[in-house]
Each structure stands twice: as structure tokens, then as C-alpha cells.
Length: 210
Image 1 (cartoon, rainbow, N blue to C red):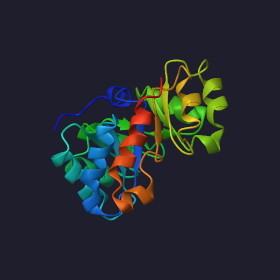
Image 2 (tube, rainbow, N blue to C red):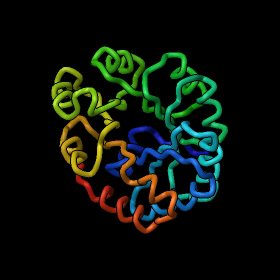
Image 3 (cartoon, rainbow, N blue to C red):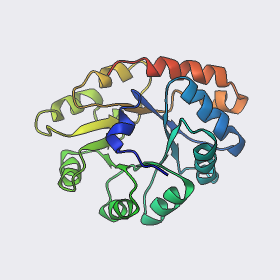
């Protein structure tokens, strides 16, 4: 399995879908629909019992997808993610223990930060691309804009409360590489197997400017 630097993952498309998969049978067609719309980097969150199996299924069946795992919180999560075929990891926060495990496993990470202190701590470990989470609850665009000068050299993937309407505002910032969002894969569309609708949403998202 070939790992991809997190910067390359973030530059694949303007949006990284954040996916909550409850039905394992939906994982592969969902991934295919998103990839067809131009979104290749997929974050499957560890929020459901089938998440790891879904990651493995997508990794095996959708070669154009770059599948990652979200909601990593522990060293054990990292090992399980790598074993399942994840090519990158995303965390809601910054944990030195978890980061050590990811480094040892060779798993590119996008850890979450919510303050300048956390961003500086991550930067001290050589991390230059971070997840700003939860973006809207933590001040959104004005906060990231204010960070651009004092935290020069650090780029972000804001996630949390972002949709098609406000995504362009984030993507216009010089320190934002991409955004994370769940709006491209609505729960109802997944349940109904409306893959054409999801591909359309993905196509709209992939066309956003960075």
C-alpha cells in the first residue's frame, strides 16, 4: 500500500468528504460516486461498527480512491486504520502519543487543532498541514485569516459546519488547502442509494476554486 503525503492528499480536490457509513454494502458505491464526481480523497470516520470494514472494502474495490480514516484518537486506532488499508489519518485533536504511533506506522496524519498553541505544538513536530476543527464553532474564516500571518507556513483543512455556501470563503484564504465536509454525501441519499445525486454534489464541490 502506497502512502501519500498529507499535502498531496489535501491537493487532490478542494473538498475531502467526511463520511459516516452505517451500511457496509453502501461503502463501495458511495466511494465510486464521489470519485466519479472528482473527489478522490475520502475520510471514513471511525464512528460506526462497520467503519474499518468499509475502509478495507473501498481500498480493495475503488483503486482511484485515496481512502483515509477519521476520528482517530488512540494508538490502537492508528494500528487498526493501517491494517484496514487507510492511506492517511485524521484526528479531532492533537495527541503526541497518537502521533508517535502514526509516525511509527508510516501513516500520514491530519491532526485537529483549535488554538494557536495547538498549532504551534504540532508545528514543533514538523507538521505543517493541520485540520482546523470544529471550524465554524471556533470562529471560522475570520480566525483562520487572523492566523495567516503569525502562523505563517502552516496550512489548514477546516472541517465542521462547512457546506457549499461557505466553503468558497474558506478556500479563498491563503492558508487553506482544502475543506472537509459531509454535505457531499447526505445521509438520505446514501440510504436511498441515490448515487447520481452524490456524484452531482461531488462534481459541484470539485469545481470550487482554491
